[in-house]
Length: 313
Image (cartoon, rainbow, N blue to C red; front, side, top):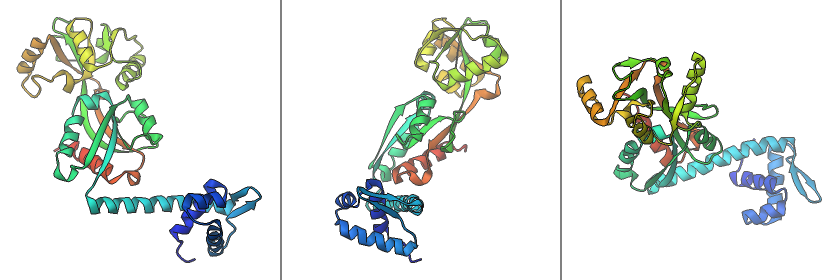
């Protein structure tokens, strides 16, 4: 079999999708008779009938359905090649829409994206960030509504490709005078004897804590449910309960100092941060996308940059 002609395959796909050769010709700006001639040559080339002609139009045969699937894949690859070569010829341009969980946005993601955009070779790339909970984020990626997402890697990521990003650690934040404030670390079970301040039920942290409480067989009581980590910390400072949040967010001041220095900073903030002795407290974020080959050049550059930023030194 001689090499298949991409133009003829494009006309074949148009005829299958329009179910009518005349309408396919209008779409592709070519006469219907010219399409019919090319399609007849294609059938001779593959040695199989590809279309059934009816009074009202055409439908693909069984062989036509097989060729249609391959033709769409070949045309998509050809289009990506043309787009990628054009991008490299004129300097990479583009817009990348990133869906991200609140944890990743509150921590390192904005700084990592800012560093990416500050590079001279990325001057013509625009990156837009939208906050989504993990479930909504994954659903949007599967439906092709956005190219890239950042969320906790414990989410249901079936059907998506991933690359590792940064990690974080969940910790218990308590008011300075709380019974757990004198401890350096505690178990999740110990927190269940006290009121919690939490995020909405559709967030990854809420779901994880609910499952952990169910495993232990103890109820988890929320005295307040708020929409952001900042609001949760405000409730903790007011003495409404404890909150389990990323340590990196809770320890914005005094982070990286010694234990005594951290305690002084926490006291000034009216809270104490207690380590959580659970394996699931150590979390890892993932960069998610449908398929690497389907990413635009700008999106691939961003994914590579974020993956490198999340690689431990």
